[in-house]
Amino acid sequence: MINATNFGLGGSKIMIFSRTNRIRGGTHVKAIFLLLICALFTLGTNAQGQPVPTPPADGLEELYLAKDDGAGKAGEVVTTFSTSDVPIHCIVQLDSVRVATIKMNFVAVKVNGVKPETKVVTTSYTTKPNQNQVNFTGRPDSVWTAGRYRVDIFLDGKLARSYDFLIEKALGEKAPATNDKAVNSFQPKQLLKPRPKKSGKN
Image (cartoon, rainbow, N blue to C red; front, side):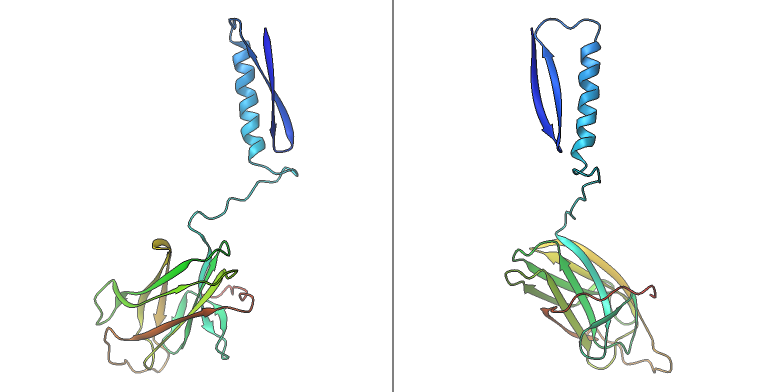
């Protein structure tokens, strides 16, 4: 006696047969195994046969830093800043519009006169309903202190992403007095305009 069962997978149907009698020679077992492999490939594609994108597991779609455009908004996206780039924008793009608490740690990794891994600023912000993008902006007391920094982003208490970047001394700039209060504050706000296009420059 043979029983047949239909399984709908990604718009196609696969019929798998099971036999109640003893299967001889392993032929039916091999056929079922091949059908299962085909089913796995079908699950990973949509109706047009294109791969189905997998959403980020950390809840963040994108994290990047940008220079100010001169009007108080995020401009060119870079990984290296000048000490005169004030303020610096940190843009957090979530992968959904659910309400979430975003915490940002601004960390001095290797900065002259500052103990490594010092959290020079910690701030947090809870998104509003239907908000999935937040722009943190930060400025020092005068100019930034040159060195290597890192931004750690936590989503609902869990580390979601880290972003390393450099702040280099501007041409002709005198070295400022260095202390662990070089970074004054980062203020979050809702980013109302579309995020800027990334530049090929770093």
